[in-house]
Image (cartoon, rainbow, N blue to C red; front, side):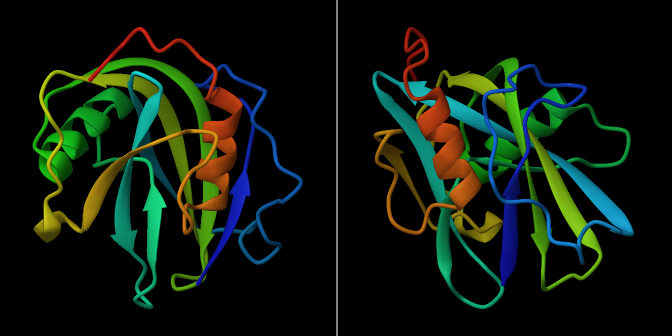
Length: 168
């Protein structure tokens, strides 16, 4: 369904430590559209929040909460809106920590590029099925569940030892 790829630091993120031996497929490189989005690394103690969603082919997967940018919207505003819509929680968006890319096979010529921000929440996240969120889980970043997107699992392992002083 998808071909995944990680990328290190971009113009609006500062962490070059997240790299991958994979790359965006040749078919994705001449993309006619690059969709922008924002994702959140939300910590509580030694855990990180993941959301479970479903691909168009029906397979379920785990990823970071967040979503796509609307026209004229800033990344931080996107993330706040997405967390309210999908998890009915009040987020505090902190600093950008990384980014990742993936190419949609179901939408040839489209590549998504997500900026990833460190975040906190001041209310408990609750999955909103009508927004495509099947469930949430607080996971050990060094042992994400089966079905976690490869670039998300790599990002979690790379950032697993970071400061856990922000608790949801």
